[in-house]
Amino acid sequence: MKHCFWFLLMSGAATATASAHGAPRPVHDGPWWTAWNLAQPLVVTNLSILTAIYGIGLLRLWKRGGVGKTISVRQASMFAAGMIALGIALVSPIDVFSDELAWMHMTQHMMLMGVAAPLLVLGTPFLVSLWAFPLSWRRAYGRAKQWVERWKPTRYLLWQPLLMWLLFALVLWVWHLPPLYEATLYDDLFHDFQHFSFVVAACLFWRVLLDPVSRLRLNRGAGVVYLFLTSLHATMLGVFMTLAPKAWYPFYEERAPRWNLTALQDQQVAGLIMWMPACMIYALVASLILGLWLRDDIRRAGDKVLPESKD
Image 1 (cartoon, rainbow, N blue to C red):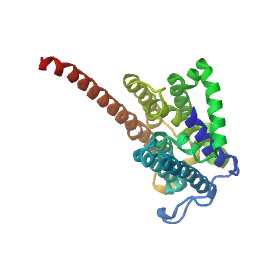
Image 2 (image 1 turned 180 degrees about the vertical axis):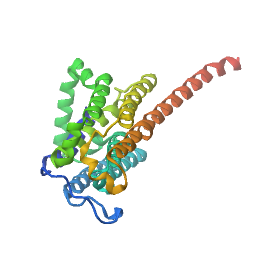
Image 3 (image 1 turned 60 degrees about the vertical axis):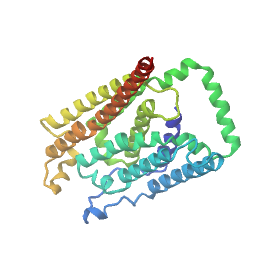
Image 4 (image 1 turned 90 degrees about the vertical axis):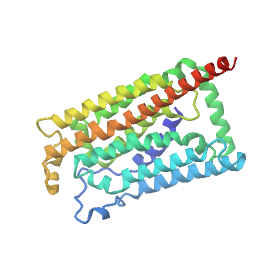
């Protein structure tokens, strides 16, 4: 659950300090490339602070053991890519136009859950960030961790892949229900909480597959099934949105026409994004895991055959 803690810090900082209001953001009238969400600098500030914490921890780790030791350059690069993906999703024109187009809003959600989250998990953010804090804090964390590990049933329940899978599915489906989805478009605080839950649920989901340092990780066969079932329910949601006879989100009825789309057409594009490109992420990762699994099986089989052939 250590990745959950790290992202609670990240998203909670942004959510706790955001200001709620009862009216949607105004439409952007200028060129699309000028539509950057700099009106709420807390997002940029929080992302910068968390990047700095990771950077300090990484420098201390590398100073102690050497560059690439404990945390590889590739892992650090994954974290950097994940933070860039978060910045693009939350600060770029994608965020501004998510208030005008449902398909842009869907793109933002998929970037948070399918791009930023797995990249951040691969960067081992909690382990690295912990080294940015004083030694006394790290020792206190170590004692707390030892205490938790004594309660193996509780620890196992918190890691349980089925629970992570259900949490991810629940967050994905519930936030696309019309009443909740529409509420996020009128309330910045609620919208921030939506993003918070997306990132935390996605990091927990990807953690049981991709965490580079944890022993509690799904084997490759179970991982393929895990991703296949996720792709299945996400595809269903995309199909429902695409084939719905009427628009689910009346909010876009006034804004989508500015882009020569009806609200229903806008929703259909959003559904197709969920249906195809977003679900392709799960299929590609599952294919990669399956390929590695088969490669290792072939290598093990070859190691058994070679000694016999020499005799």
